[in-house]
Amino acid sequence: MLRLQNSNEYEKYSFQCEIIDEAQFIKNANTQAAKAVKEIQTGFRLALTGTPVENRLSELWSIFDYLMPGFLYSYKKFREEVEIPVVQNSDEDAMKRLQKMIRPFVLRRLKKEVLTDLPDKLEENMFAQLTGEQQKLYDAHVKRMMLMLDKQSEEEFKSSKITILAELTRLRQICCDPSLVFEDYKGDSAKKEMCLNMIRNAVEGGHKILLFSQFTTMMDHLAKRLEEEKISYYMLTGSVSKEKRAQMVESFNKDDTQVFCISLKAGGTGLNLTAAA
Image (cartoon, rainbow, N blue to C red):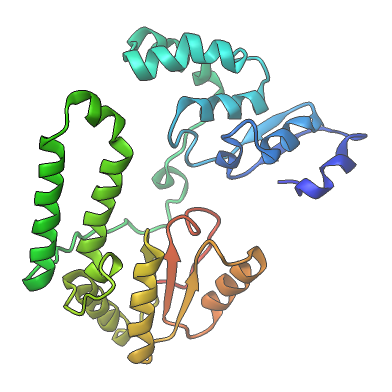
């Protein structure tokens, strides 16, 4: 994708084709990235993405506004005739109409269809049983939430969804490690100990590990333990520059660093980590 600071240099040129990768980055039509790629003069356009719709149908509209401006109408008309009927009213006719319109222009391929040399992905769910003080804190927080919800009317519930989501996030954090919520917590964390045990076993077996977490504070806690156990690691979060990010990826693929800690937000796209196994 062209660099935004150089986008004005392309105004005087007309290209035969324009292809953008990670097209979800233009899902917001009002961003500079979306506006820049749409200003390029070209006779043919392609958009590559693994997630054409992440949260809302307006993201699909923005990608098609890049591919074929006007094909899905103006966003105002698209929202009135397609997005609102589909999302708010579950209108099957509107959904079928949208599917019929975009089907000729969408080429969908699964990894198993194009990467036949890759081994099957194996998934194993591991369960960590909460115990002791961690279990008590979790149960207390659940009861607190139930009392809060029981006292709310339907209207109050509708207006407090953000608060409820915040409380659910705290529950998830308590499951990871209560110290993410309670600074003075000194007890055990079943999930953290299980995670560290899996890392030890993998490192002893000569493997490299990619460790993802939504909570950067959880990764900080794990990193501290890795340091104590002399296990080498890299840490990728949203605060890491693009240059440093590329450098770490290249180094991890070549050197003996054993663990790559990655926040989901920072590592959701654009990573080529072939060394992990």
